[in-house]
Amino acid sequence: MRFTSIGITVAIIWNKQDGDTRYEVRSAGNTRRLYTNGVFHSQYNPASPVTGSVWDLLLLPAFFRPGAVRRVLVLGVGGGAVIRQLNHFLQPEQIVGVELNPVHLEVAREFFAVEAGNVELFLDDAIWWVKQYRGAPFDLVIDDLFSDNGGDPQRAIEADGRWFRSLLKLLAPEGTLVTNFGSPQELKCCAWFADERIRRRFPAAFKLTTPLYENAIGAFLRLPADTIELRRHLSAWPELDVAKSRCRLNYAIRRLKMGT
Image (cartoon, rainbow, N blue to C red; front, top):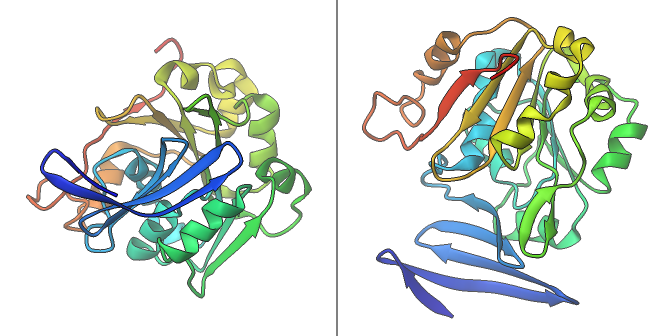
């Protein structure tokens, strides 16, 4: 099936019906997009790894300290777009991805080509996986755990104190936690705002947004950081330097403060 959206021909190149769930991979030029019950889960274009949308926001906090990102944990692989981005820009020593949905892993491997020598994928319940993990800590943890609720994405677990503490146990002493929230309001309800003990564990915290999506990304750092440092590191890459015409980044970042 082919259809046109804003002058771009979009083709459904793969689909699968599993009970009440329909999966589609659509192409738009060189771009691959994963949809589950119409919910847009992942997008990646190997010729243009920056999407200009919400997936970039999961990647950007890694550039506060890019040289320190050696071990990465991705909770909620989806199509694996952020894994491809991490390997394109930073090539960490190890990326571990945990995904509950076997079809998403199938799509990530076949259509998003996420498999690489430094990537290890687990088909598992990420919430359970986090609780039982006893291995080495991670420099970067990306929490992108969403489920489908009547065609609308919603977080699969509340980002309360218990969940933050579980993730802290996996995070290196100088690590960064990146969490995807469905809206800025949902971010303001998370444990960083509600629990002073959590705030003390993360001396720097930021909100990243894009005008294209309602999502808000929380970046929680265990070391002090500022956006000048972030932009200096981003400017080393033409694709990430907003001063360059080829840069497709479309984001805003603000430091989190109580009462804002």
